[in-house]
Length: 274
Length: 268
Image 1: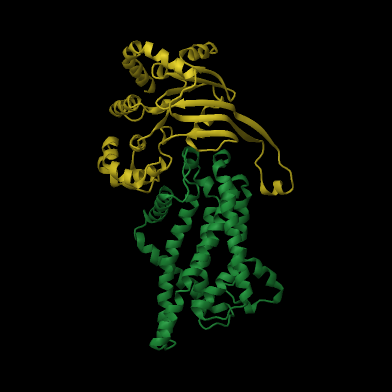
Image 2: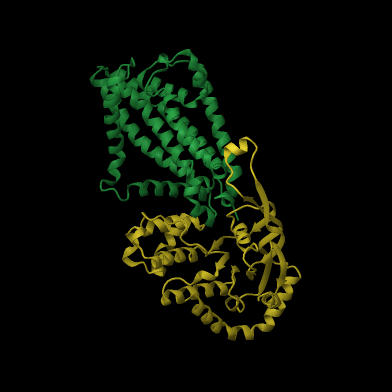
C-alpha cells in the first residue's frame, strides 16, 4: 500500500520538479555555502554515546564494582545547520545513526557532547499512538495526546472538532479506545499530530495510514505542509519517494556525515548498493 | 527541543496526566467513582475487625488509632511501589516523545493524594462523630477539636513531599538498576512494621530507637496520632529530625531524577 502511495506522490510531483529544477540548483548551492537566514535546527559537534550492555547491570554488581560495559558511538561529531523551510532527507544504512539523530532533534534523548538547538515546535509523525490509553475515550485521548505532541490546552480545545472530523471517528468518539479498530487509532493519532501546527515536521516513510480515502487526505495534508514552507526532516530508505520532494540529502555512515548536499548524494549513495 | 519545567505547559501536562490516572482507574468498574468512598470504608471495617482482637495496644480507640496511621501509610506505600517500575512500564511514551518525564511519577502521587483526601474526609467525620457522641464534647471543645484538625494540612503536605521524594528517587534508580524494584518490594512490608501504625512507640524496647530516627515515616505518623487522637508525642526531637530527613530525601530524589531523566530513553 505504501509503495502505491509513493508512486502516486512521485507522479504528481514530476511536473513541478522539472519546472523548478533551475531554482533548486541555486538552493542547493546556498546550502553548501552556509545559510544566513534563521535556522530551524542547529547541530554543533554532536556526539551520542551509548553504553553497550553485555549483561544487565545491577545495583548489587555496581556496589561490588563488577560491571562489564562497552561504549558505542551512535553519533560521532556531527555538524548540521538546517535553515527554516528546508526539506531534508537523511539517508544511510541500518545502524548509521539516523534514528538517534532524529531522537536528539525531537528531544527524546540527550546528547553526550555538543549541542542541538531547535527553533520552534517539533512534531514527529513516527509513532502516533504513544500516549494513547485504551480505557479512555476519544475526547480524553485527544486531550492527552495533544499535550504530548506539544499543543497547549487552549489549542487542543480549539482544534478538537477538526481533529474528530479529519480522523472520521464519528460516533466512536465517546467510546473507549480499546473498541477502536487499528485504522481508527492510526487515523486519530495522525489527525492529532497534523493539527499541532508544527514548525518542524519529522516524517517517516510509514505515513501511509488507513484506507485509500484517508491516505489521500494524509497526502494532501503533508503536501500542504510542504507548500507552507515548513521545515521537514525525514528518514527514508525508499529513494523514489524522497527524491523529488527534498532539496537536501544527508548521508550518515557509522555516526558521521559522509556526504551532505543535493541529488549527487543520492547518486553516490546508490552506488554502494549491491 | 524546548524543555518545560514549572511553566504553564508543565502544569497542564501534570494535571492532564493526573486526571487520566484517576479516570482510567474507574473506567470499567460498574460502581465507578463510588469506589473512591467504598474502598476506604471496606478497608476500615475489615482491618478494624481483624486487628482489634489480638493486638495488645493501650489506646482509647484502637480502631481509630489504626486508621489514622493506615491511610497515610497506604498512600505512601502504594505510590512508591507503583512508581518504582513506572518508567519501564511507560516506555512506549518515553521512547517516542519528549514530555516532562516527572509528570508520570507526579500523576501517580497526585491521583493517590486525591484518594487519600476523600478517605481522610470520611475519617475526620468519624473522628468528630466519635468525639461528640461518645466523649460528649461540648460545643467549645468540638470547635477546638475541629480547628486542631487543620494541622493535618501541613502534615499531608509533608507526607506528599516525602512520597514524591522516594518515588522520584526509586523511579530514576530503577531505570539503570532493575534490582531497585525488587528491593523496594521487599522493604515496604518490613517498613510497615518499622513504623508505628499497628503499635505505639511506647511499646518498643529502647534497642530500636536508632531505627526510629532513621525512618522519616515515624515522626510523621507520631504527628498524625498526636493531632487527631491527642496521643502524646514520643520525642519532639525525633519529629524534627525526621522532618529534616524527609526534606533531604525529597531534594535527593528531585536531583537524581532531574539528572537521569534526559537519558531515560537510552536505558528502557
